Image (cartoon, rainbow, N blue to C red; front, side, top):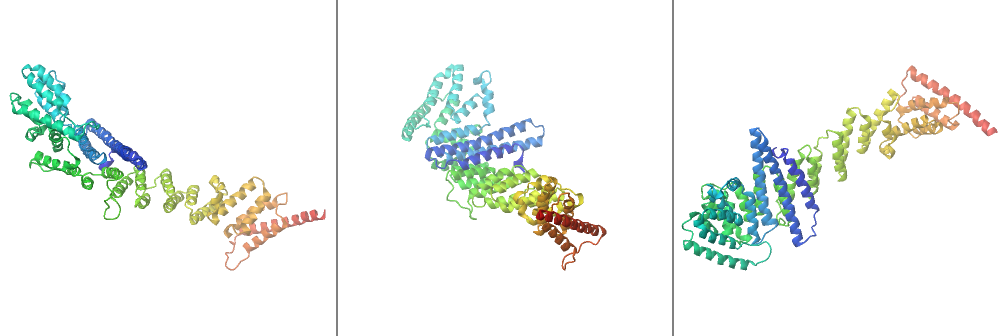
Length: 591
């Protein structure tokens, strides 16, 4: 997928930070400070786009592979188009520039994005004698068309000093350029004042043109016509403007500098028609910019969704516009609003990537209607390739009380561990899943292993089961049986004996394990010191009889020599112990 080229990671990671900041930002800020905050967020998004564009451009320049070079250059032009559209939306919708400042913002927008003439400007300015350069007048025109008056005047002064005959003409033109009234960003003058000054200046300029002051110098005459907003004169410079929207802004600068936002649509449409002149039809990008000039926000988003090959742009732009309270009225036909729909699409795309999926989680979190459902569906599809990744996914589910998914992940990991014969890991996963049946299964495997090897694996885990021991009867038995071994190892024989007996009489131990427990009692019965009381000895005898008598419905003991020998040894040991106890207890009572 083209959006996962290495450099674009930066775009996703950094814009995720900006997105999260915006979700947490102060809704309380009112009026100007809130608007300033939102404009800043918009600029931050644009600076990320520009940084990625720089990286891509560097990659394109430094690669030797023509196929890659083509790929990178395509990405650069896509990113450049994104920033062009975003910047225009920022001026018109986020900042909502008003008549006056609006034109200044549009001029900045054009200067930033029309770069095709920059190399020509550099070539002329760095030549030994710029005014002798064949492209000299082209560069002067570029400056005038972009409203860069100071730079145009500086260049013209070079021409004047090199050409004394035109000094008078130059002075008049220079004076006009210097005096031209332009809107200011501060509220230093009202629109009416500006319009009056501009009218006055315009008439004076007109007089000199009609008097034929510049007749002898077609270059200066052409500049004078541009300053007067003469459409034909501006259109003659089509090659220097390269786009219809540059033509639009130049035209407004010299014919209607106090244009109001709502008048833009008429100028935009006629500028596009004049500039393309029926020779070429508008590209998708032209249609998107036109929709913006017409203040058709939803159209902008819809066209961008179709034209751009990923959801990144529309998701983040729509979220920003939604925070500007500009999309309230627009619900999509299936109930979710447009912001959420686009964020869900974008985040779903992130989930198909092996490392970017974690960013997707946060986007789902900020979709109040369907985010949770989407997250549950996508989380279940993440391949749990390593324990570390499983723990990461588990943390995300636990933080969001997604109990169903927590259980499912733990079960999957428990099965994996069991298949790889890692019993300890399997047991801890099944305890996390609170899966009693699986815990029982694994406890049985532990006990079977013990019977075969005579020792426990994963002692640490079994010793520290704590309350989770109660998850299943078999797990309780495993924990308690291990405790018996510990007490025995610590020579706390009386406690060990009590516990052993309880395991059988309270039916904690499965019947199949009773023989093992009784065999474990043998060393205790053989101790020098008498450990089992008479009562306890009778209990043990009863357990042995229960085990050996063919009860209806219970499986009889295996009838082999080893078992028979064991039973005989146990009977003998129990009888001997009883005799010792009676003697001991009788002695105690007799004293």
